[in-house]
Length: 272
Ligand SMILES: Nc1ncnc2c1ncn2[C@@H]1O[C@H](COP(=O)(O)OP(=O)(O)O)[C@@H](O)[C@H]1O
Ligand SMILES: [Mg+2]
Image (tube, rainbow, N blue to C red; front, side, top):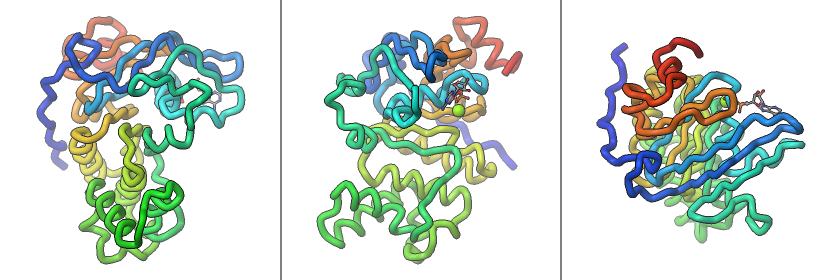
């Protein structure tokens, strides 16, 4: 097995390093609580549009909680509470006037374990389009399903069997189907929580290549426990530790010349 090729690093600096990127997500002094327990502390970070930002750090440090706070997926957890501000395109997503359903359409999510519906491949992608009233005619619906499957690099593998069950696909194909389903409703941001950690190396490589392609059109935030993966796919890396954001910056710098000793210890495998 050869290692996946390493895509060329983006030359654009992250907002955290002073360049004039477009900020997509702006988090200021965010605290997150499960009941009385604070699991994220004073998180301040800008996430750049059309970049891939990787969240790394040991298990339990709050990566998934942070990711889910960006589309209010934590709202459904009793006792979960956010303080501070999270703005997307300048809009406070925790403001009372925010339509959470619309927010989650703009900020799509892909989970560690692929979770297709027990329906056909076609229906998995069409579902979100239907419930959001996004397809006018049958042809429009078919066109949007095809576009989404192409964007997720799955079309050629499934175009002749769109009516068969999604559950018959391989793990890697199911994960790309979940990406197609997320893309169908035209989000701007894609959140991915360890999207390849249950996949074999070849399926992982396809997902990594896909992430790299998708960033031209989407802002991507990916949690990964795999540091090589973070180095391969991301432009910006944010290192979390015990609920704090220790350091965030260009991936090549975080891995070669971090500012914080803690980051260096983590990326060189001294703990984790
Ligand atoms: N639904 C929940 N209710 C209470 N505590 C939770 C819940 N989800 C996560 N936690 C706790 O919050 C902390 C951060 O968890 P998490 O965000 O899942 O970390 P990571 O993704 O980095 O492993 C951990 O201590 C975890 O036990
Ligand atoms: Mg997690």
